[in-house]
View (cartoon, rainbow, N blue to C red):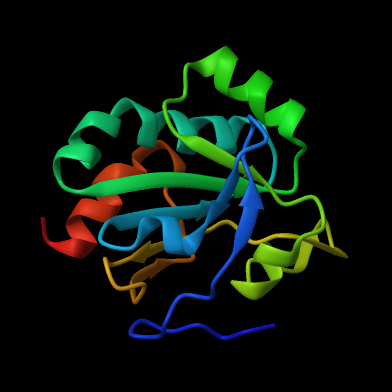
Length: 154
């Protein structure tokens, strides 16, 4: 599992959106990117996080950011999730967990003393040149926008 740090080059990725479109990191060259990894569509924490970013989407766009979410859910699941909550940004279906692993967002978790593998909720802020500017491993799902703004001092 990679141990990415602020200042590292973001790992290149190729994914597929809810609409079947190919999305690559290179597509965001010249733009800032909020790349967030979340466990599952339509669960309370993931819905809160996605809706918080979506509620502030126009502000993110004005500040030069794109937003992309990634989970192991299918394109079909993402399409329903986007439709249900009116999300304005793409979600990548990483069913093979390749992007999750490249970013270190797939790993061992623990619940009620039982260990299992799953998505480690993480957000990466990537600059116009593909460099990681900030990493959030303790995401405040209901207030993620303010958490990002404060950390970036914008």
